[in-house]
Every structure is written in C-alpha cells, then in structure tokens.
Amino acid sequence: MKIGKRKDMSGDSPSPCPSHKGRRDSDRATVVDVGASSRPYPEGHTSRKERRDQVRMIAWEVTRSCNLNCVHCRAASHLGPYPGELSTGECLRLIDDIARFSQPVIILTGGEPLLRQDIFDLAAYGTQKSLRMVMATNGTLVDEAKVRKMIDSGIQRVSISIDGPDAQSHDALRQQPGAFAGALAGIAAMKAAGMEFQINTTITTANLHQIKAIHDLALRIGAAAHHIFLLVPTGRGRDLAEQAITAADYEETLRWFYRESLTCAIQLKATCAPHYFRVMHQNKRKGENPAKKVGGHFHESTRGCLGGISFCFISHVGQVQPCGYLELDCGNIRKQSFGEIWETSEVFRNLRDYESYKGKCGRCEFIKVCGGCRARAYEATGDYRAEEPLCLYQPRQ
Image (cartoon, rainbow, N blue to C red; front, side, top):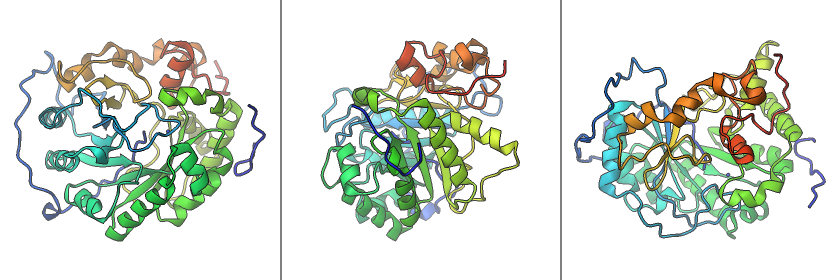
C-alpha cells in the first residue's frame, strides 16, 4: 500500500524521547527528601557501573484515570476513580528506590498524568534525585499555568498523542469531541513557554492512509520528534484487532519512515515496532544514514524491543511489567525493592536470554537488533517468547 492513500478496508501509552538538557537549579521546585527505602536489595546486588542490564527508561503509570476514552487504549482507561493507586508517600519512596538503583528516564504517564493532584511534586522530587523526568499526556488539560509547573518541576520533554491530522479523525479515535483542538491548544502553550514536545501516533488501518499528513503536521507545529507506535491489541485495543495493519503494510510503513529519516530534521522513532531497527541496519549496510537532527539530545536509534532489558513499566498499583502492553506480573514495589525485581524477575531474565526465543525470532540474525514485539507475540500465542506474528523477514539460518 502507498503511504498517504486510503486502502480498501473490509469489514495507542507513549514513550517520550527526552532531552539531556538540564534545567537551571533556579527552575527546579524545592522538595523535601523523604529518605531512602528500608527495603533491602538482593544479596550480591551490584553497583550501577557493574550492572550489564541497566534500566534506562521506566514508564510509570502514575494514575489510570483519564478524561478521554481512546478506542486503542491499552489500559481501557476512563475517568475512574481507580482504588488502590499508589499514595504520594509510596510514590516518593519509589523514586528514592529507583534513584538508588539507577538513573533512568522516568516517563510520567497514565491514564492522564495531569489528573493526579501531586504530579508536579513527584516530578520535582524525581528531578531533585537526578532522574530525567518526562511526561506523556493527551494534551487536552495543558494550559499556560501547567506548562509553567512542568518547567519549574524539571520536566524535560512532553509527548502529546496525535492520531489524526484533523479534528474529525483524531476525535473519532479519542472518542471525545474537541480532543484535537485541546491537544493543539496544549501544544501552543508549550511552544510559547519553550517547552520541548514530541508527537506520538498509534497506527491502525483507520489512520494508516493519513500517516504522512500527521507527520507533516508534526513538522509544521514544531515538534522535536515524531514517534510512531504500531497497534498492540491489548485493553480496548483488543476490540480493534481487525484494524491492526497487515505484516506487509507494517513493513512498508517502516521503510517509508526510514526513508523520511534520511532527510527529516527532527527525531523519528518507531516504538512497539522493533522491525524498524532491522530495517535501519539493512539500509545502513547500503551506506544510507539518517540526517543529523536538530533539537533533542537522545539519539533516536537504539534497538528494538527493550522490555525487561533496559525498559520496564510500573502500573498505578505498583506492579512491575516488561511494558504496558505485556501485562505480566514481575513483582510489586509494595512488596519488593525495584532493584530486587529488576535483577531477580524470572520474566526479565527470560527476556534477556535471546537463545530462549522461539520460532524464526530465535534463529534470526537480527535478534539482538530487533527482538520482535514480545507483547504482540504474547497476545497472539500466550507465549511471550514466541515469534513476532507481524514479521515478513525470513532469517538466513
């Protein structure tokens, strides 16, 4: 299929790519140190520098409540309330716990994180602990006052989800009239204050023909990055399983995105689309390299599925998972330290053991580059180490 043209049809929580750029001390809120967690790390616990599988990014669902009802939401979020969410004290202790173990990027996500009353206290405390704090929001609650609080609390970048190039298409996926206008108003407030932002887009058959238009919109409004997410059918997204794009369209979309990266001045990254990194490596062998980017300080080229390897997800009730889409209980921070979970979880250890992967993923020469989407494999087969179901590539072995 051709990107930007409608095909005949029968019949997504973002992860920002934050900046290294630090805020001045005068820009940071003053918060009180709540002290270190009393929970011990496992015997033989290693230092940050000694640790090979260091956590580099954590998506933290600070609340599951949301003011929208997006059709593809992995958490099937609504306004709530949701009982059992982590208290302010528990959140501050968790930040202490993480900061003692590593210094990852913390993505404050939801639900809608701006619905949490103490969100800027949490962001400020994380900043004080030398954690790089970023936020993923739908943008509809962002205004001038909230942007000032983002800046004062040390939030370094904000991602806003845009799933259509106009109100009709975006609002249909968000199931809320005015969502598109609200997101653009939030972006305008961030631009006026100099807050760096990126656009995240979940791709389904409903908007595949609009991806180029959405990308052009991201460029036009001054985004620092555009991240695309390939639908993983979890939560409400299970009802959209028939709207997941085909493996052939998946491959073509990623190749188009890579071609855009060769000349595009902003960061482009494919998330929940690990094949993209195989596509990158294949094309780099031909001497093609993406253009040098302006804005932002994290390179968009990392590797494919990072769940349990350098990335994890913490739910609104403290459950640690490989990612938000792969709802496997790896431990709970109310019962164990974060470091103990990260180092001892059987699921995490299995995900780091590429030799245990099955099907063509297990014999693929790009396994350490791509890894396949473990959540998509789990949804399709019930086995998170099974082969990625939306991959056309045939390994050489």
